[in-house]
Length: 215
Length: 250
Image (cartoon, rainbow over all chains, first blue to last red):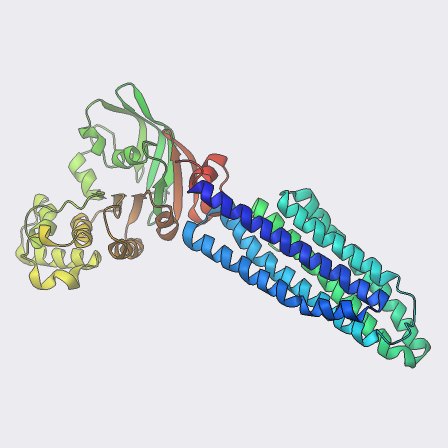
């Protein structure tokens, strides 16, 4: 029975990794679409949202089946309940990447008011957070999970820089307002993605130690 | 103060050291579950708590079991009085081959209660306490052996309650029962908690999580971990507990 259960947990782990890399590529592509004004890619990202939603449902279903069949306790229960929470964060990240792609469509035919520098940096930082949070989960690494949690400050600081920069633009000339607001929304989505990656890392800590960061 | 204090308790079956230096405090009106693989000593300890082990040939003990501060193994302790205070319900329902009424009245009668009105009162109260009164009240003369397994077990619980014990020991009370009867006994155990201190040996881990406040995990005659049930089943401290409750061995 236990070996069957272990196999099922292994499959669950693999599916979570798959969902993580799918979501990771969505962030990457949404920023690529923004930088390159690639409307085809932006549209594709938006349609890819169903794929993430389907994976969330499939993993959730697998978790519930495991709970019903195996009545997991202790580390098994913590693992499965953490996965149930993590997939919600992954799904939200997927939505936010699609939201960025949607805004990039609005901006595609416009001359950008400034060269994109800090937004790609933010994207890079959130991708790193997400990747490390999933790695921390797979390798059961508390150190890496704590690193992700701490790294959220980097993303928050970048958001403040982007925000101040855009406020300057609006103050200089109100004609920059519309685009500045769109960019600030993109930056805010990235900042939220950082928060979700941090949540994932906190669930990793919980699944290993039984203690959640918020307690 | 604890209702029961088990202090440096050891038990031997001839040369076999079956319980090793057990120390445990059992709180009043708490439900404590004993879990562990077969042969780990949990039933031996349960039986030691009302001296059922006195009847086992070759069995010897040292250490103390304090009931309200008094060692139940002291020479001046009367075993019958002790077993009135600490009742027991066994794995297989074992009603006496007599009427439902006489099953319940048996204990009180041995303690010299023979007044019909008083016995009627005790029988009703005990059957109600064991959540079986409504099912049998119109047929108290029926032979208890003609009841279903689940009903027989509740009769045995009623029989234990009839002598108004303070502690109820239950040795796998639902392992011979179907899920519905099991569920009834589990609800009953929860209700009994208001009045009694309960210790339950169970092989069913889910049952331990459902009914008990505290859980003790036994392995090879030792208590490996004794903690709040919620904690033991979510963040066990000892790897052996973790391995057992997650089914890695046992």
